[in-house]
Length: 596
Image 1 (tube, rainbow, N blue to C red):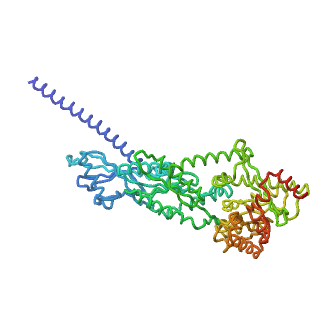
Image 2 (cartoon, one colour):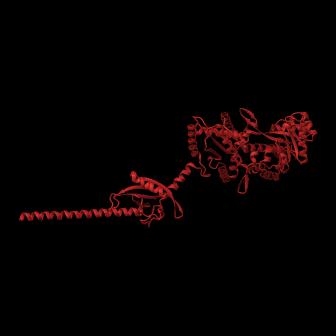
């Protein structure tokens, strides 16, 4: 009896101890669960994400987290997917279905207009098992939403800095190269042809240097806008540096002739969009462009090849006067190499003062000297005297012409000053200085000339500025304004090579011109029948009727001089009278003329 009692007591004691342990375990687990819930609650309160629970039928169950942007603090269990801030409802359902099927995390990015602003969100999904105690076998999906707007904006900004030009917002060289390489790869696969157009603004450096980078940037922005109106969605426009732009048409052609035809149409449209002057800060600027075109073709072509060939073709377009387009030819590369070397040699020659003015007299019909033309010569230490016909075009294209003209004007001022000091000048004597057409594009012409002349204390009436007929036809109002400004200062103007143009007669009376120079080609033909002399006679009569002096250039024979005197020419210039001479030799020649 006692043993049974003891056995029962022992059993009851064991049950009591086990229950006590169980209660202790439950308390421990409850405390751990409470701690976990507190931690989870703390995390939920501070994280910027929003969590939404969906069941297997993509029905909304409940949400966690706080997001003012999404305004999901008061969602109800009856909330429909179409009213949730999740983007496209059909896309949401498909992602939930895929998450349940694959049991893998899914990513989804979408945009919403929240609180009046555009926001970008990233959603991640994950499976939750045993979410509901009363339905432990059912699966649920956690949909976590994060606002990534700031991150995306930062990524876009980085992309802009890496792939886009900060001034014009056009693609830069890096993006162009990447796109071009893809097109080249596609061209090789399809055995098709593409083209690339390389654009360079003519004389843009003069605008930047004389008017400042602010105006230069405004011009570049306007250029970008005009190109966009032409190209639209037909190709990529890139600014690859300075005033260089590239057009890469999107479409490849199975036929090279078709590709060429499309490039020609595009190039003509681009040239047309530069016809109208650029109006910036109430000023008008005439900007022209040269275009080089290369083909995307061949199994070994690289992006560098295509760009280099188009660049070479562009310089060919510049060589023939600019504001035109040219296709690449292998021989052009050799010409470009020579041109670049010549440009480098000119820069060196300027530094070493190898350029000097030679002076060729202009005489009246009685043999009296009335003026002299200052002609630039390159006195090379090895090659000797280099003709200006060889280096002037390169100097104009490379923006070096101002420095060469300053050298000539300086020498001319030195000559006049010497002649004044030795009292060998009569009141009407002047020196003719050639002005390049490209110097009229900006407003620096006046300051460049006046600053040198004023520094020597010489009257501007001692100079006449020789311009070509092409200047008369280009941006007429602007050129007249610049000429009148110089004219008011005292400078005179002479039209060089008169008669080689075809439209100037219609405008000549509107320009502040003092003199016409008959081109040598007409003087050469003055004794080739009545037509030869009639043309010269007509020009002389026209000049006199308009109140202009008229000079014949290129006079090489006594017979030509005699005929011109009979036609009442104002003055003559040419090898018959005298060759161009250095300043010292010119002074000696002048003394001999006076003594004789």
